[in-house]
Amino acid sequence: MFAESPIKRRKSKCIYVGDVPVGDGAPISVQSMTNTLTTDVEATVAQINKIKAAGGDIVRVSVPTMDAAEAFKRIRQQVEIPLVADIHFDYRIALKVAEYGVDCLRINPGNIGNIERVKSVVDCAKDKNIPIRIGVNGGSLEKDLQEKYGEPTPEALVESAMRHVDILDKLNFDQFKVSVKASDVFLAVGAYRLLAKQIEQPLHLGITEAGGLRSGSVKSSVGLGMLLAEGIGDTIRISLAADPVEEIKVGFDILKSLRIRSRGINFIACPSCSRQEFDVIATVNALEQRLEDVLTPLDVSIIGCVVNGPGEAEVSDLGLTGARNMSGFYEDGERQRERIANTDLVDKLEHKIRTKALIKASMLEENKRIDVKHLDESA
Image (cartoon, rainbow, N blue to C red; front, side):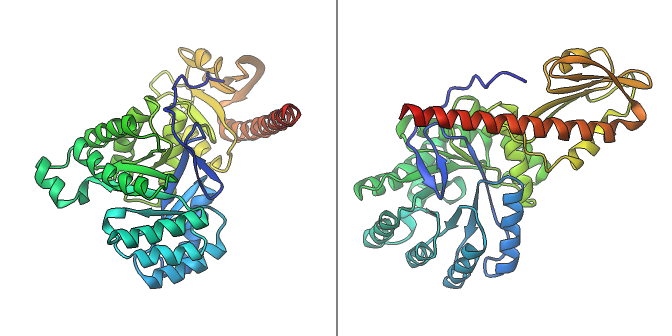
């Protein structure tokens, strides 16, 4: 029930990674990367399917060898989600996975050989309508840039990116996106801000090697949050030393917090204190676990007392305000006559949330059909 995001997105060119639009105001996509051995096809397919089930829009797969390229062929045949092949040094691998249905190539034109090799990859990408991601990383800057700047700086990352951009420009290829990642928040943010002023290509955001689940989530939220709030960014990847599924969850939580893209339930819950009339923390934890499969965007407030409870409930789709023995219940901002026993909160709330999600999903689908009909009539 909260208002739309006030963020004004940076204008950028649109490219397609499979059927997923990236840039030009398209919904910001959330992606992850497999951490299995690509040659272990069964494990890689299983992980990709888990990422997709968690809501991932795009999955990147490392393809370091020709054996991995052959495995990629079998992987591509078994999954239904856009796949990006991460390739370094050997241009022939890029040509091979292009034959096998890759949806995007992550390369740095400067590290796959001479201009003829780069041209062969670009020509293949043009022929098969495959976009490219230029991926610059603060940990692997070119030696001359390290010497010029003394250390990774925003200017160094952007200069590296522009070298690769210039190569593609000279080959008349414009179906690409760019990333300038670093493990330091201010370095990455500074680089993306500079780059956003210099090119119109879509930007892939990330804080690389951010850390474990907790520290990496915090670092990524701070860095990406700064950029996204300024309208910078068209697709995101949260780099965590954790299960890739967690990257998708954190990515959507970041977008949800900025009201950029809503997916699933947005729980508004108090940290609890001695005023709470029921166990808020246990209730929220239980509901989050039970309702992970609900994809419809809903705002649900769960507040343990009447100090802030009514105010939060009035701007939520569903709200619970703690009271002794029987807590107050709100729907669409309106106080309901029904009260819910504090001993039965989790089961009752789960049922009400699922019911509300089904109703809202039906309404959203109907609105989408109406919009399509109006577009057809005006065409």
